[in-house]
Structure formats: structure tokens, C-alpha cells
Image (cartoon, rainbow, N blue to C red; front, side):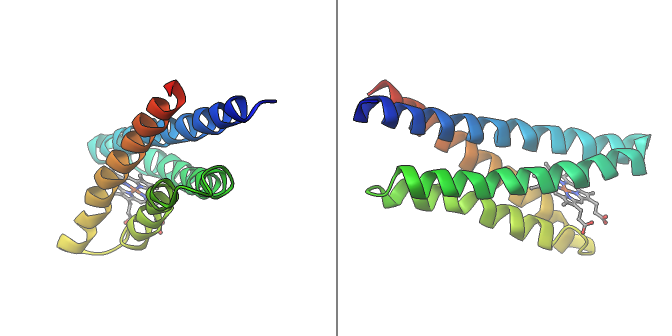
Length: 127
Ligand code: HEM
């Protein structure tokens, strides 16, 4: 496998993980709002399980970035911001009042971080 092919594999894998996380955040918003709108505990329980799944994907994304972008600290830092935002969001998920709102705010920041990482790595893939 040539260096270019392997780089493209890394770019593709990074972009796919980042896109899945971006879509996952949108699904999380859907589930949270469904719960608020009347679906109740069922929707929020699915939200909890998907949240942990997204956290696992976020950690996997950092592993891919560390292994695949050893000479590009910007990408590694960008990828690392994703599970960091997730952990911060989960940390305030049960907070009361205004602090609890940070959970949704951090989720939006997370979607921006993940979607921009996907855009950057897809552009790198095209060369
Ligand atoms: C998109 C906007 C989001 C909204 C509006 C939202 C809303 C909520 C709400 C209302 C709860 C219930 C809190 C409680 O039990 O008192 C919750 C819990 C939770 N959320 Fe989100 N969420 C969002 C995004 C996310 C994302 C992106 C993740 C994953 C990275 C996530 C992971 C979790 C987890 C793991 C819990 C359970 C926390 C616990 O039981 O300690 N949420 N969320």
C-alpha cells in the first residue's frame, strides 16, 4: 500500500467517524426533545446509551488521529477536543437550572468541532 493510499485511508476513517459523531449529536437533540415532548423515559434512556456510544467513538477518533497524524498536532488537538467536549457535556448533564443548559450548549460546540474535522480531513483526502 503506498503512503498516499494509507493517508487517504486515515483521512477517510477520520472523516467517517467525525460525520457519524456529527449525525449522532443531531439524533441526541431529537431524542432529548422527544423526551421533553412526551416520549419521556424511553427516549432519554436511548439518549443515555447513544451518548456512551458516541463517547467510545470519540475516543476511537483520537486513537486514529494520534496514529495517523503524528506530524500534525493541529488535527490531533482538534480530534482530542471532541471527547473532551463529550466528557464535559456528560459531566453537566444532571446539573440544575442554568448550568444544566451547558449540556446542550457543549453538544452544539461538539457538532461544530466534529463537522469541521470531517470537512478538513475530506479536503486533505482530495489533496
Ligand atoms: C444535542 C443536545 C442535547 C440535549 C438537548 C441533551 C439533553 C439531555 C437531557 C435532558 C438529559 C437528562 C438529564 C437528566 O437525567 O437529568 C441528558 C442526559 C444525558 N446526555 Fe444529553 N443532550 C444532548 C446531547 C448529548 C450528547 C451529544 C451526548 C453525548 C456525547 C449526550 C449524552 C448524555 C448522557 C450520557 C446523559 C445521561 C447522563 C447521566 O445519566 O448521568 N447528550 N441529555
